[in-house]
Length: 328
Ligand SMILES: [Zn+2]
Image 1 (tube, rainbow, N blue to C red):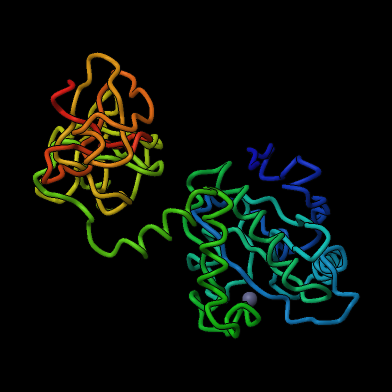
Image 2 (cartoon, rainbow, N blue to C red):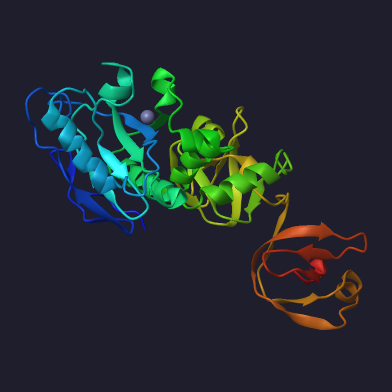
């Protein structure tokens, strides 16, 4: 379960991020401001890199020591906030301070983004998983960290080369971070793929939602799938308003806008209220003849799934039985 991190003066205080050991080896400033820049920054996102050093010794800890040696040598302008490998993460510069890594001088890459180097010394897939968890945890803690970008997007360098050279490597990296933040995303994405057009009866006055879907404050948000407010539990809801955008506003204590594309079952146009317990039957014919009673249907409101030509009705909501409307 994702947690908010404790960050003091730009330095993460936690010793563990989603199971990954977290270390601090903050560069000790020396001479020019070329690694420990002393330039304050209000970050808006992340710049992601690969170290391009496959040596088995090129761990996150080793890179932190290297960065200190660069500061001590006082020649090169280069710095990074985090190094991540397959078994730990090390922070080297406070995240409220500019680092030099994106190749864009005092452009937005260096001056507005938290830099994350994924190490190539060991299990690169595990190192990438660890980087995703670091970025998701920081996004969860600091909502202003909205964008996740490649080094390449700032200055053209082919970096992070491992992710860029893998088919869908970068897009999967970014969507996996979204899935850590919101474990229901994969379900929503599957629904979006399967339901290419609304499976809805536009005359419906009520709607049956078979799996929990997101509710939004406005019709526009619902259509754009942004600013999700809360999950609307599966169930049957009256449709209060059908907005011109295509969004629906549904009632029953959930006065939220929903996107009907996310609904996985065909809504029913009619419901029936049963005021006393009546018998349910396996077939339409049995219902009309009152033979082979199966069980009592408790009083309540049910969607009518099928109106049979014989006159019997089939009702839903977990009671897929036939009934005789004359018994109501
Ligand atoms: Zn890079």
